Length: 192
Image 1 (cartoon, one colour):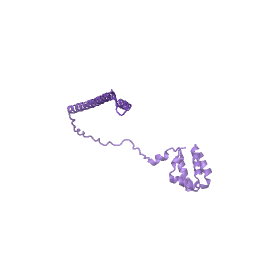
Image 2 (cartoon, one colour):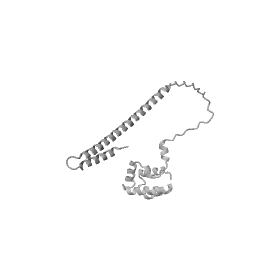
Image 3 (cartoon, helix red, strand yellow):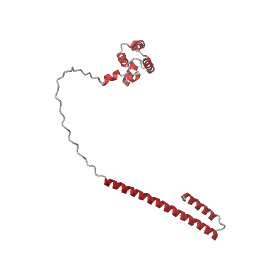
Image 4 (tube, helix red, strand yellow):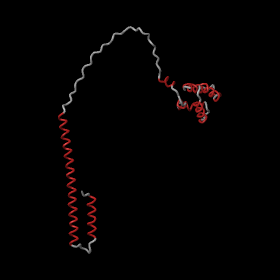
């Protein structure tokens, strides 16, 4: 099968032969050879065009056949009938029985209670933004590095007694500050 690139190459070689002829006019033999070459190329191009048209026609026939088969299958299938749902059977309500078992009082646990009991692996997560500013200002005299060092040390400590001892040792001068009491409450939320 001849491709478009082969036809272009042949045309190029014919053009080159035409340029190589002596003088202004090519000889009769050169003209005949060039004409035969052009005729062959023209014939090959026509064959390519015909082959392409045949392929396109075959594809269209296949598509039409597929559409026809699908339409036949759709026509063969019966229409789906929607069946009404049966009415639900009446439910019997049991008669109330006298309570023989003791009533257990339900205790409700709020989300806040659950969150307070949650273990905090890092104290930084226990602070809101406002708490962080408040504790830095009131307990650590506005020193962010000092506060971060204290939090790192508190995270490292393993027992509640160690935490309280560290707080009283490092923040002794702030013992009357209500912010310290709130800070200790946050530490108690952390399961140590």
